[in-house]
Image (cartoon, rainbow over all chains, first blue to last red):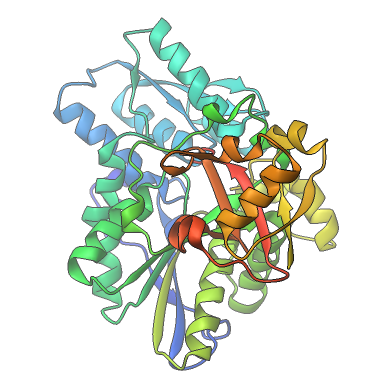
Length: 315
Length: 90
């Protein structure tokens, strides 16, 4: 495949069948390999869409400084695109994220401001909003509230899935900004109203939920729960176990958020098999495992791996 | 029919610091009412006039109750209930 530039190659990722993990010939699992995007994650789609939109509507002027709260992948995608398009970037990154994320961000020229581990991404959002108010000339694309985030998946991920798998019955993805699920969900609801749209939400260690009061909770502005069929919470242990199974049985080296998604997908597969129903379950491989190798959670006992991720934003 | 309820850090001042408590009830609403009887004040932290508070998520066996039957979701013996504040990802 030939492209005129790296950014032209975003999307069009492969959909890979999982012959070993699929429970039967009638109940099949399919992995959409989003780590094949230029910076190695699904976020390239959303970020490119948000930058293009902001350039189009004049929000983003040449030489501008971008600001974004991110636990990693969005910032990394934005750092690469900002570099190519001539913008500065300031990322607010929770301090309980893997060191590889900081390395990648700084490698592409972003300035990293850390937010406290307590409160996780909620705290990064809060700090970024303070910085945005203090620096009115900075442009915050704000992935949690930017419709262009979900639109990327409505325009690309959704149509790609249906073109590759017209018999799709379930779509499973992670729930962070909710952009992937909202965009693909809206597209599939229009095209195949009977398709089940399922969210797998990482359940982190307690530190991440260390809010001072419940009113500090956070629901992304772009989230519309009416697009989802169900939503599962998946802890680190199940996420690690499934990430390892995906590697051992199908050869796919993914990050832990993918393990959480696979856990939900396998639950749906089991349910379909028990009910004697046909199912084609597609799920998102958000990123590769490279950025998480330093966690040590790919080897050793599950207990050790689980403690290694305790308190970390592993998805 | 006792069920286990996992309580987030932020609500533990109400449960005397306990991380996991037990409660009874045939529906989630009944379980919350039972919890509020044992730990007065917890009900109002979870619910408002419209039902489950916006920044509170409750899961029965890891499934978000908003996609089940909400507060009317049936609770069975040995079910595990988890309460968590809503947080951002990404």
